[in-house]
Image 1 (spheres, one colour):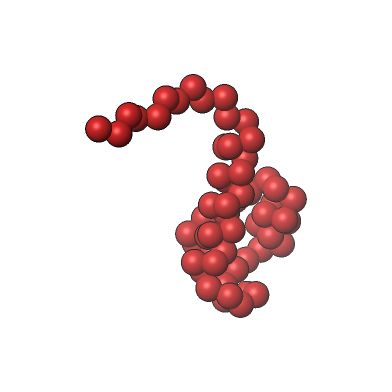
Image 2: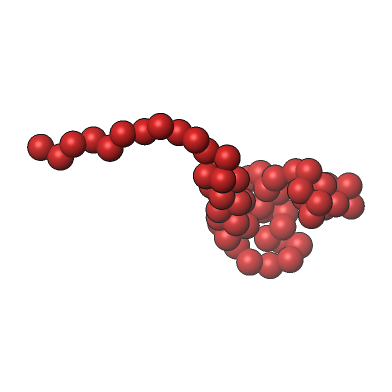
Length: 61
C-alpha cells in the first residue's frame, strides 16, 4: 500500500475497496470484512444524512 493511497483514505478522498480492505487487513490486522463493514457504515450514514426520499410504506394485507 503506497503512502499516496493511505493518505487519500485517511483524508476522506478514497473509500475502502475490496482490494484495499485486504491490504488494510494485512497491514494493520483485523479482517477484511471488518474494514469493508466500516466503509459500508460510513456510506450509509452519508446517504442517510443527505436523503430527502419520499417513500411510502407498503400496507400489510
